[in-house]
Image (cartoon, rainbow, N blue to C red):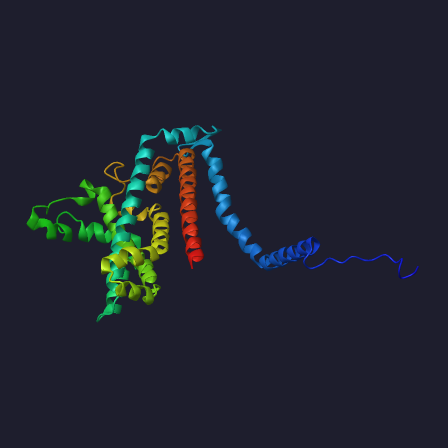
Length: 319
């Protein structure tokens, strides 16, 4: 066979479709090779987190009460229907929303104010920062006991001692205003966390932008409103998201401070689920409540994360 009639072997050109497909396949293979060492950790995480959740879903479809061990009949969605028609569950849900929103908003506003005060040089700034951060480092149980027996105690509490000249020195805060008492204790605990996030955002702000605003004749309020606050938006959104996720799961503060009372006046969803499980012994309905709470938390967290990522991407594109 002559060289003129010999078949021509075609090779994939680097810029051609075949070359691009082979490059993508190589990248995928390299990605899987790099992820292979993480597979045991992924399997362990799924086993620890998802298997108990699947068991909870199975329990939620059964009529199981510990006072009647043989009552494990398959009832389907009956427990979920009972949950959404339970007035105490709806009240606990409203308390959860009120406590979470109040705590996050107030602690964020206080955190912004404290961060603005600490974002300047003065004598003893390090000591002041350490003292302000301290409430966030105290155990939640210790925080609840501190507010219950030292701050809000009706006879010897510091709050009534301060308010006694104004005629409000005999108020039993934990009994008469249980939700407010819980919110105050949580705000005291979470304000340092918000302050740290906002302070990190303030220290990452470029000084040239502030100098340009001063040169243009902008006041301090105008510079904060139109320059500093838009820069802090990502940090504020992150603080609101993380604070909401943690505060919505508050249990120890309510358990130690008000016991969910009077009655169920200060019960939130985690505490009410605890009551139905360990006081009412109703595993089926408490499991259904847990599934509902997890689903709602996932939906809210997903929407918040999308908002934060969208804001971050817009900021990156603007740069």
